[in-house]
Image (tube, rainbow, N blue to C red; front, side, top):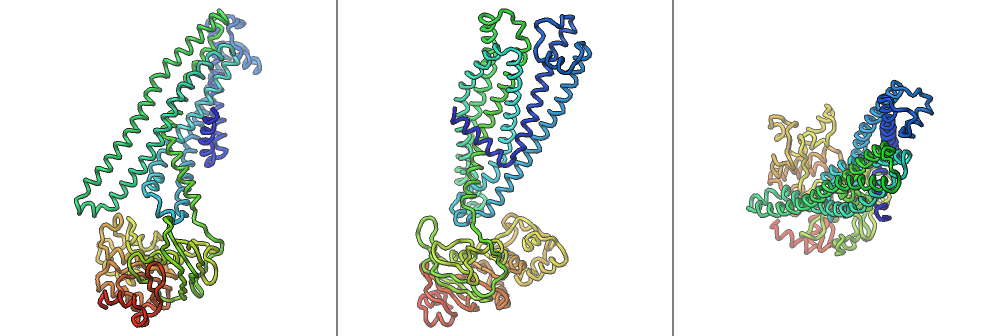
Length: 593
């Protein structure tokens, strides 16, 4: 019993976190609906007595209508009672509308807050934790589970509203005849204990359904992201079998949830009839011979029992989707626990240098990726990082960009510890061009301008960035020019064009510090040469950190860092390293430069 109360309070606390006192307001409105309905039903007793000429002082007249008529000093006549009933049910209709309106309105507020919170928390999610989190789990919790949470909200508050009606009718029934009410309540308690078995099974299947959905979403994302490879290698159908297998698993749990719900639906009415019949039998045999004296109590308890059964139905349906509530809550807790830490000092631009001192770094598996890195990057310097695959080039760049944090050592920006700098203000000054270009399913203009308004100033800036990235002529050749849609992940353009659009975006932002991770890797020789000339033209205006496998790319760099197995082998100009670094010379000879 205590365990069930804790679980129920957990659900209440979850919704209260988003809605606060709005929950109390909607509960008060539901209470008014129940009171007005119960009192309105009670008023039918004197109405029937007056309509059929029964003595108004007859012992069958109920206590509720007597209380209303006497305290409001109303004449006991047919018209007065009729008007009271009309007024009561008219006011009830207003509260009923308000109840439904508030539920829909609060549901919108709740879902908006949940979605906004998810977006904000994901934006602040620690990158190191992100890379080891299953993509399907993130996708499922942000889409499918949130949609099911909307259903959970509706069912939960429907359950609360019906529960309030049950309590109201029960209270009015106790006021009318407490002895008969106790008999029916005892029967209801026994019935509820029986149904607890079904509730536990529903919760279990709901959690398993959410878990299997996470796996399915992950597989689905892999199929979409790797579609080209799967299509080219004939593995589409083989991978599709995994998806189909997971669909069968999900369907199995849906079926089990349906069977539990069907069983409950079949048992509710026989239980209810049995409870009422047995209560009447016991009452007539052992408590009172006159059944007529419990007519109003029976009417109220019938309404109470009807709503009690509806409450159980809604509660079981809620439990069927409660796994989504648990999943979303656990997901949010994970995001909060792994929130990216940030300082308070705003970054106002690089004045002198970026410095790494005795920096070590390792991912969650514990293996060191970088060891004892000491590096200083001056403002407006072009620094290249080279090394074999797996030597830690991208990891080093990500630490400099503030995406990853050192396991040991210090990262200083103008001699200020990076931990004390507001991360967002620093990152807004960065341009990041990755090996696999980021292309949004939007127009060329929005891809480069990052959704800024299409003013004449922004358009002029757009075309300048396009020229610097050598993509101007291509855009001009398109029928819709800058309004052309690029498609999902740039499906409508070549790899080289994707790269140039990515470069144009960062140039448009007027970033102070540019990071280029294999930025020209997918370009043909002529275009690569043009981009390199553009980079040379930026020399002295931007601080540029670039990674390249093709060593011809780094000749124009001020300095080159040679990484070997996670540590710095040597640092210097291209000519210096040719003469003094055997590792760099070996790499150059392999590429026959």
